Length: 295
Image (cartoon, rainbow, N blue to C red; front, side):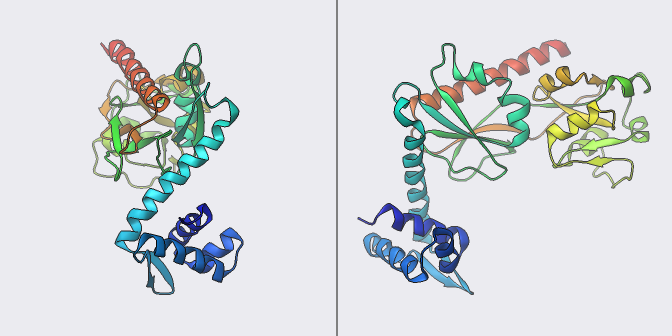
């Protein structure tokens, strides 16, 4: 049976596409990385890598074994994260992007961990797609589904324009897709919300608009009076109340994208399933309150 170091060498070589780069990352020699990978190939009984240009890439069989090895190593790491209290307080590692952590996860963290607390959420904040395992879930935004995983769609969102109280006081009573273009609009990194709300195939770049790399930043910019932002309800409701943003148009448009709880294809731990159920229930409850407000 190859050592964990040998399996780690496979994953580093797969990620970097180079034995030399993998050796540098692990602070070992090129010969050592080659020997470790050779051990895994001998144990598996097939070639894991093939030459590609100046580097290497996984063979089709290598892709399967690398995915299984990655899942197993993640489970070992998660056991270590639990520490001595793991039996009493299970840890669920949760992958989220910065804006979701700030706008929804942190405000709801205590409710998600239970009352009394029966699990601990360890946030893995990264724009990359976090690898999934028994004690890991991710919250991803898009149309779904994602490969090699199961996804649970959360509540449907609605787009509606909001602005600061100061800016809202200077605007007409109810802006529409024609009149709103006279004012600065704030865009997030996806940049597809405004064309949908405006009912346009695309919106040309305009000097008076602002483009920011995160949804939470667009709401902060709107609170500073820098323009009009599209709020995604119910996702952005808490931030709107906290920042004092006000709606400036009645028109609402359904967002074709939505958040999903994403888990791996295998069986989840009890705590991970419990957290997934709580996120789904709480997000749906926020949506129900919002729909009642609309009516």
